[in-house]
Image (cartoon, rainbow, N blue to C red; front, side, top):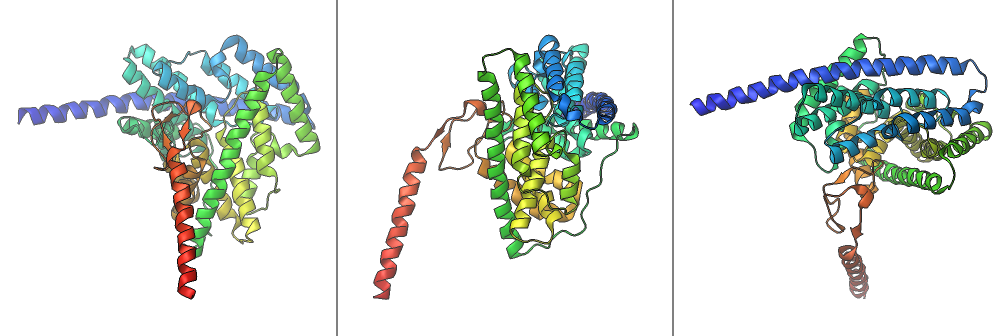
Length: 452
């Protein structure tokens, strides 16, 4: 009896402890997100006074690159990737200097027209503040790691207004195929508190609930499987485009300032000869697609190119907002090709399915679909997200993500390593394919005999 009481008291103490820690982290991230979004809105309004503000992109990317290189190299690229790297390699230790540098560099990049997202900075800002809080309390490495994961969850939750999906994203994105259940409760607390604090401080979140969701039927189920395949393939292309952009700029044997200037000039060309809609966050295009408007057929491709140039040449920002743009455009194009009247539904499902594939987070993406668009979209989003997740294979927009499972028993892989070091063995695959071909040939022969 005494042991049972002691066990329950210990668990109760743990719940109280992590409720307090996660609440503080959520409040800090809510404040940080509010400051970041206010700074971004003010800077964007200043740039918006100029009719052709995107012409300043070379100078914009140069300023962002100099700021990061000189003050905090860990703030380079898209923030969530750096946080995942810190969690796996340094038990969540993130220099506090990353917070102001990431905020400033991302504000400059996005306001000036760079194609990136706003969730990465919030995740990195949240993780940086959480790491500083852990240092203040002199927590051990295990608790520090948990608190930093809470920072990721709260950052995602506060920037998109999805507290449950944000919490799930933080514990699902670290390892492909595994979730950190020991951090799930504090992540929920941090996400919910962060969302509440940001909302109380005036952060507004758009309402995208769509009342005209298509009914579940045999044909709609098949369409969602096809949409999942479609979004998985486009997610794969986006991942490879990001890798290619990073590799091309990395292989340029010149000063990083020249790379930033070149990237800015390429973005100017996209804005001048393509459309300025492919620059910046692209929220107007996302909103239009979710309302049922038909987007340009090449929107997904152009946004992928613009994002790879921005982040490859020295710009700072996240990748989830571009993923939302590309996913919305992909679902939009799919609906147009199949002459589906409910373009908005396919755009919404495409948005979350793209996230599931590119980030390997099907559960968080499915829940995000429900939080953003209502419970009616749940069966469609769940199917498309899982298919997209499987189709992408062992690739991710976050190369530091650890491989924790095999997506197919016919493709043997070594788990426990970052996806950047991924190597697939096709031995089993080479056995399966000829076996299927032989079985098909036998069926054809048997059918001919039967006809005779």
